[in-house]
Length: 216
Ligand SMILES: [Zn+2]
Picture 1 (cartoon, protein in one colour):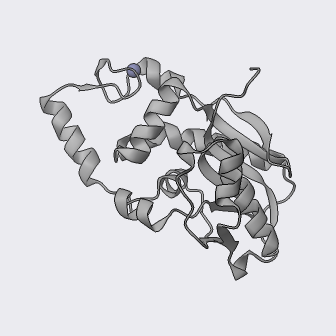
Picture 2 (cartoon, helix red, strand yellow):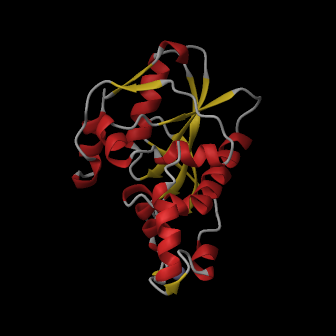
């Protein structure tokens, strides 16, 4: 379910007080025309982990895209979901062009119980639903891992290693992983390992955004 209380409240508030644009702080709509334009998807591809898992992303996780994605995920700003959903859908389409045949299951990362309780919604599933892309539940968390934000590259891979397991229904499935942001790719690589161990074929991943790559 998409929580409506917050967007309705912020829409009402906007009638009374002008709110700053989430992207640049200019007083006006929740997203000014310039920031909306900055969120037009430009798909990039990269490969992550030793298995060189191909990842397509709709936006660079920087500037406006980073601020808007953080507000959407951490401040309950589900009113910002439209451009983010379009970016994710562009990444999914791009990833699927490299894959022959139909019947690919889109598998979001399992949220921690705590993040779901704190937010009341699963950001990636809300975006998929907005684009009418069905999500498959083929992954489970086996243990809690520490927050990845404070960890370095090697630490991130160690932290999540063995943290997920594929569900029995994953056997024989052809899978595209879906997440909000790819940083080192540690979470996606762990998800691919878990699904492959459960008998799935993992074709790649699609994310809303990717952290900027060195040398670009
Ligand atoms: Zn703006």
